[in-house]
View 1 (cartoon, rainbow, N blue to C red):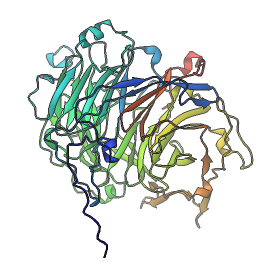
View 2: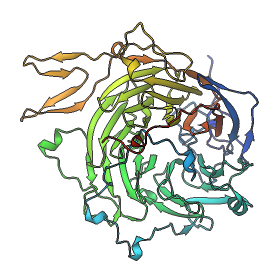
View 3: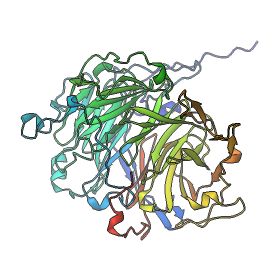
View 4: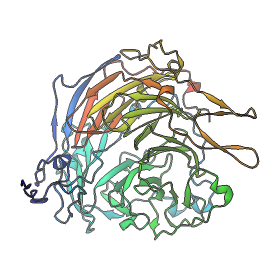
Length: 573
C-alpha cells in the first residue's frame, strides 16, 4: 500500500506576504530598495493613433513581515505557504499642474448640493471663528509610539529634494503589503522613495488624495487597511490621525476609500461586510449603535438599503456621519458620478447598484453575467458606467436609459480595474481601458451610433486600428393585457396607487446584447495587473508584485478639445 509522505512544514522561516510567497517562492526578509528599468523597444502598445512606448518599469520593494504578524490561516489543508492579505498595488497620483488635469468639456458646472446640506448639525462654522481654520492631523508619524505603526523610513535628502523639485511635477503614493510609499515621479531618481511607512498589524488596501485641499505644502490622504482602521496622513508635515481605531465603528477590512467630491473633510469607505460609511476626518470616533428603525410597509417596497445612520441625523458630534448597510456581501469598489450626485457600487454577489447618495436612496440593481463584480468607473460625461469582474467581461451600462449597452470580450481571467481615458473621449467616441489577472492591458473604443447598426455592418471609429463590428443591442418589450408596455429586461412592482417602481434587472441574455472586441490587447507582465491610470502624457499600470509601468503617449495622440466656450464647464443636470 502506497502512503503519501507528510507535507512539508507550513511555516519554516518568515515569508513576506507577497505574490511571490503565495506562488511558493521565498521572498527576502531583509529590507530592500526599489529598482527601476528602462526597457528598450519592449512591450509597445500599438493603437490606431500611434505606438505607446514603455518608458520605465518601477519595481517597489516588498517589505518583510513584521515579527509579530501572525501567519495567515490558509483554508487549503495541502497548502504550504500563506495567501497574501492584500488586494495588490494601488497608486494615487497628484499634481498641481492645471495642464495635466483631465479635460472638462463634457462636465458641467455642478449644481448638486453638498452632502448633508440642510442639516444644521453639519453646517460649517462661521468664517471668522477659530473653528473655521483647516484642521490638520496632530500625531507625528515618525515619532509615533503607536503599535499600529511599525516605523517610518525617510530618505536622507528628502527635504532638499522637495525644495528643489518641479512644483508642477507628479507625486505618487502606492501601497505594497504593509508598506505605504511616497514617490516623486518627476525626479531623476524616481525609484527612491521620499517616505516609506511600515505598519505592524495591517496592510493598506486602498487610498485617496483630496483634490480640494491639495497645495504645494499640504496634502490630505486617507488610507483604508485590512484591519478596518483608517489613517488620515499629511506627508509634508509627517502628521497622521487614526480613524475607526480598532474597528470601533466597523471592524471589517476597508475595500475602497474616496473623498466625497467637493468636500474638504468628508470621505467614504466601503467595508468587506457590505457597509458604506461616510467619515469626517476632523471628528472623533464613538462606539456605533444603529439608529435605524423598523421599516414601514411603504419603505420595505423600495430597493434594499438599510440606513443605519442618516446624514440628516442630528447626532453628528462623532463619526460616522452616515452609515448604510447594502448587503452581507463584500463591496469591491464604488465610484462617484461626475454630477456629484450618484454612486455606482459593485459587490462580490455580482450586483451593480446605483444610488442617489445625497438622498440616501437606491435607484437600480443590475447583475453580472456570472460571478462577482470587482471594479467600476463612470464616463467623463456621466452617461455610461463600465464594470469588470469574475465573468472575464467588461460591461458597458447606460445610466440615462438604465440598461446594458454592450459586453466587451477579450480578457482570459478576472478583470481587476477599468478606467476611461478622458484625453481620448469626445461627445461621440469613448476610449477606456481594462487590466486583469491575465496580466493583460486592453484598450476599447465605442461610440453610441455604432451600437445600433445591423449585424453585418461595421463602424469606423476615430483613432482605432480596426473598426469593431457589434451585434445589435435591440431591446424587446412585452405587452400586457391592459396595453401597458413594460421593458422585459426589468422586474417592476405596481403599488396600490398605480405607479410603477423599478426594483431589479435580471441578467441580460447574450443573444440580445452587443459584443465589443478590444482595439488593443497586450500582456504587459508576468504577474496579475491590478490598477490602471490615464495621464495626459502617459498610461500607467501597477501589478500585484509591485511593478509600476509607464507608457508614453505617441505625439499628437490627445484629441483636440478646442470648442466654443459655452460647452466648457457646463453640463445638463
